[in-house]
Amino acid sequence: MYRHLPLLEWDQRVGAEIVWMRDSVKHPERDDYWRDFDIVGELKQTVTPNLIVSGWYDIFLDQALRYSASIREHAS
Image: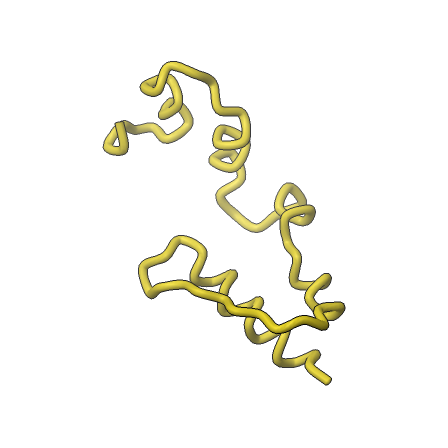
């Protein structure tokens, strides 16, 4: 099922409508839809130790690097 295109119809192969997946595929670029998911602004308030783990081919690598840089920038 991972090879099925278009991605917007991928959940039909699973047999259930996956609303969050359909919504995210409809917004491939960073727009207002993603604003609520972006926690970089909240990272200024981080006061506990953190461990951010990612890999070069991780789909969330960009976010892991941004989070790490933001925490480091606002560290006291």
